Image (cartoon, rainbow, N blue to C red; front, side, top):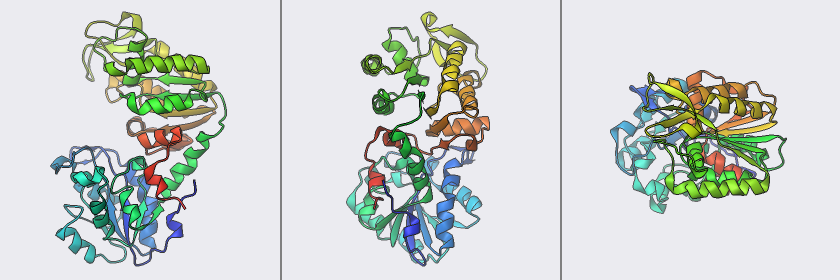
Length: 393
């Protein structure tokens, strides 16, 4: 895949519409984790240094097409101003009179941030008129939002049909780092998949059944597979309607010679909190009100033993409810172990990033840490991503 990048563009005195992925967690009136903002700074700094005028757009959360004061971009604009050391002007919409006036007043080196793109229903519908209105504000389009390139939305794909379009440095880095995983990789090759839902993981499990030696499961995903194996999962989070899918995937894995490893034990509790009573329970003992909230210690050691011998490792999604201290050990020890293994390590997903931040682990210790979750998985499946297709030469 050969991308058109910003180094191919003439941006001096041009108004550049930049799609970033600033879908960051907010807490107590500030940005809790600014990793995604920091990752796009090289692109924004390059454009500003080259004499461009910037219009920045991003989504934040899931407002479902309605204005939501808690999901406004104001706090994000403040944090971007601090990091860029430039005054970022923020408007309260993506289109309309206020935006028209703000864009008309832009000069080289200025930065304007639009409101949450998902406050508009037209965004997720990839509405042509909405995309064209956004495009009309600028001379060219730059996408640096790797975390959204698997979505054909107005601000990620639609605008590219109305403007010359280029990839920013973050997207270029992500594609260069992840593309080799689509070919032959060094073995043993291990995939670690966690998180709550099975839907986003089905495709990547199928794609790697013939390639991976082991697929290690954690989180709500593992609970669904445990239920598929016939075990009682108590009151644990799992997807009842996906049990049959999980069963089919395990049968396919047996035929392909790939081992899907479902934990044999879990850290369980009757309630969720930082100071709750827990037990390290074999799966055969789970019952009643018990919730499986992290992988058990014996299963964790089995995981670590497999990872120690691996030459290529992909990890997407925490293996437990890492935000709560009693259920953080599995995710923390895997993250710690991957800093020391001799193999290549590729990590991705918003929760995985947040876990690294929470544990204070330096991302430079891993081969590549992706800012995308779903985008990373779909790229690894070999799917054509609409937000990347529009940036290719």
